[in-house]
Figure 1 (cartoon, rainbow, N blue to C red):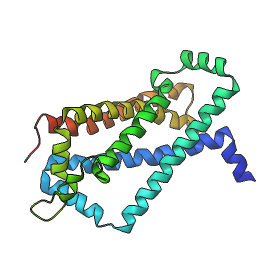
Figure 2 (cartoon, helix red, strand yellow):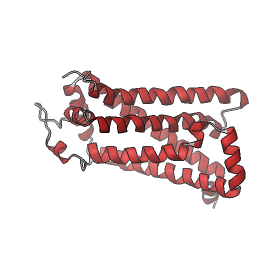
Figure 3 (cartoon, rainbow, N blue to C red):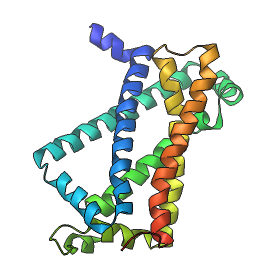
Figure 4 (cartoon, rainbow, N blue to C red):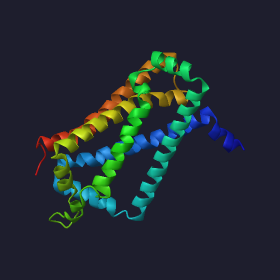
Length: 225
């Protein structure tokens, strides 16, 4: 009963959104650090990818767990939005436009763009539905040639443009999300709120620079060969 009431309360839902958000931010950071190995050249990038695949069942457990976390984050975020909107639609809309930032007001839009981006990313690089020829690309060491795959993908200006726009929306989403975590956990107050907002902005756009540097470097032919 207590568990049910926690999940049905605004506080409980906010905590779930916050905790799942932290887990997703952790993944975003780890994924970025791995992807940045592209700047160290093909051998290191492909060796990193090969080590990941050697995890076997552990990798699939991590993927399923990540999918579950993302699903919970989306579900409870939408539940909170519906709850706030149904409580007083007109008042909520006016209050939202006056008291929140652009990043906060665009959370649903940026979240949907990021979701679409993730699905396309998976279809292109993980499932290889968009470019099935990637499955056959092997480097001189017999490893899947992830480096060549990224170079080929981001050599396309449309793909590069889409990725840059998508990670910009990701940064917008994180700009509000990271700052609001402290308020959810009761660690913020009127004095600290602005500092946490700035911290969220800095962290979010640092993620943007990191992720954007990869397609930009490929497209501008700045990578080692």
